[in-house]
Length: 220
Image (tube, rainbow, N blue to C red; front, side, top):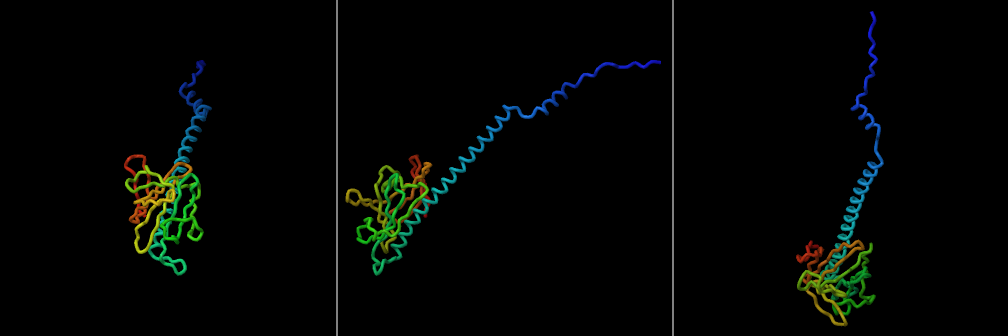
């Protein structure tokens, strides 16, 4: 008795063949380009955000350093830090504004005119902002917390026993008293902070907003 032999060739499973080819294919060039582009975009966003955060931190540090320097002058004036046998002179901080204004002065008012006279005898310490920071503007905040009225310079002076600040600006040899002054500090990257000094002696670090709301203050 003869056995019949089945000579029919079994056709391959099309689904399995397709899956095998797909698994062996790997990344195409287009898929690789898209993946690398997405990774590069995410990395760029993270780096930019981190750089902005670092800039904000440095700017805040510089603003608080300036505020503490003014507070130092106030302490010197109130607690009668004398030079030699003289305990009657006032102490102050002098600022100039401009693109190259990278320093400010702590001074002793030897001649009693409530203004810095640029003499070496009056200059106690010169502070440097560093890292490209500048005193971009000095703002007259006597009536409003907006920088509509800009100043060339500002003296902030403290004289015992009063903790209040004597604030003025000198232009053309004329001294003009101020009720408050805003010292705007900027970085090369465009950020800014304000150090605001009131005639009451209050010192605060502020952010000058473009909106009419003015500034948001944090006391020192």
